[in-house]
Amino acid sequence: AEVLLYGPTQDLMGNDHDDSVLSDKEQISAAWSISNQQPSGRFTQTLTENEWWFLPLLASKQCLGVVGLKFPNAMNMLSVEQKRLAETMIEYIAQAISRTQLSKELEIANVTSETEKLRSALLSSVSHDLRSPLASMIGAAETLTHYRHVMD
Image (cartoon, rainbow, N blue to C red; front, side):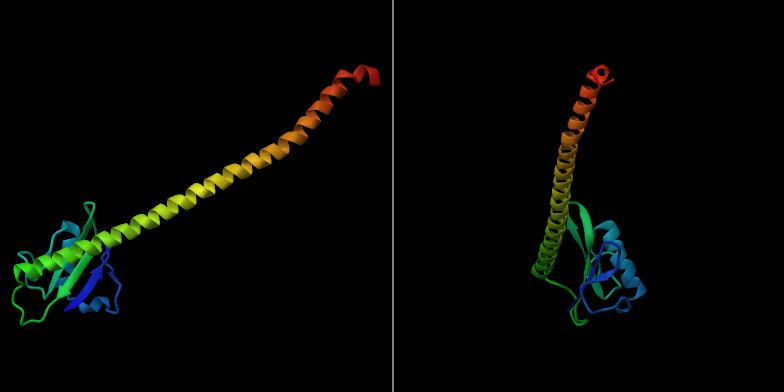
């Protein structure tokens, strides 16, 4: 069996194949699976003339991509157990991709939060460092204003 992984933008990912592996009909079938979030191609009722069986990678009601499975031509059908096994493996792959994406988003959020904390601390430090000299200058100016008549 051969396996292809297409991302949500319908670009081939994670293997040494190029886009020419699939015929135009098969690429349409893969795109249909992404758009409709349903299996298509071989062993389905949709776009059955394909050699590939396309299963969408679904996580949180979102299609992360599609996996294409190609079986030997001699294999006319899959047993219920084989279909369930493939579908379960696809679900696990989708969950792993989703967790990886969530982990990246969490890391970005943490970096953003730390950046904001550092910016706030820097501004606080700068404003404190400026406040002391400004307070001294204001105090000196007030003293000069108060004793102006004595100095004249």
